[in-house]
Image (tube, rainbow, N blue to C red; front, side, top):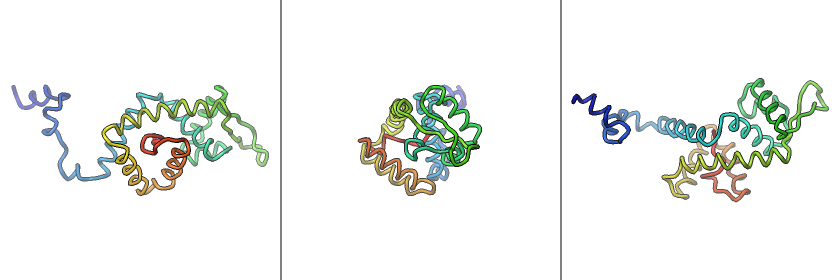
Length: 183
């Protein structure tokens, strides 16, 4: 058997994993590790939540935290295209999860508000997100999860959003390490 056959036959069993590792210089890059964790986390989230639920989660979470927002403001806060926001809001409105009305100050804009059914749906989706986060972080104890969360919050782009999410998680009685992971 050739060495190529040896490696291909042992793939998936973990036997040849050391032989297939990336070079040490790459493994030493924190950004590479973070990217790998992000990719695995996205896959785990996809197993627990369909794509539409992930988009619904983002919009409903923003409305819960910031109150009524225009569709344009939702898009800016979430980094979503306005056409995508429009489709998500239409879907949520058809499911009776949000209310949409014309902005009294500018009739060209729509203001979106989460309603009681939307908050219930958000909690339902949150439980799926929490399952994915628990699976992703299963190898860490609670202290390590909090430490990882705190360290990630210090990185560029992490602090303001993570701080708000952490505060919200604590208010809801969740530990920030499992609840409210970004997707």
